Image (cartoon, rainbow, N blue to C red; front, side, top):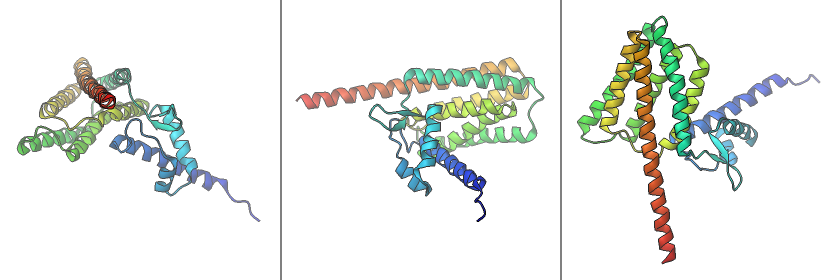
Length: 255
């Protein structure tokens, strides 16, 4: 009998493992898997129509990357970020993105194709701002936030991609995904936040077009630090609310 080829089997296994890896990432990014949620290999394998092995291997990779962590009670859960984790992640993001955008501004400029896409992400943010003003609401809806997150990711990712540094892009994307583990606790952007982000992105892009390296770096650094402050303020509020809930529950039990 002819020997069965293992190449196809190995490739298929790696493909399913990749699917499992991306599925877990997507569930974390969307908020379906919140911080502290136990990862169910059985449920994920059923969703993928696979065995538990590729799911276990994907979870192991995400564990090594910091998106998942071991639970004291056993099993693997979505990482619960501390305040210091958020500080560290934003410091890393600022260092890498400021370096990358500096390279873009100091280089040969932006191709028309990339500039069109960057301007497109700006137009999407402006469109969301107009919708928010017209609606009379103070915050974006869940669906509008999804649109905003996509345009925001596109803007920052394109700037790094133009710098032709795939490794920086990978690390920054992983960093942003980890930050989103906490961001699921917040509601939609307010009008003042959206206006600030739009103006900031517009100024950064203009500085890149003008190849003003120092201004690019200064504007992007300021932009990321402002975002970090918002996340830290939200974390502090969330922590206070959780503490008050614990106190209320404790009081109720003692009555």
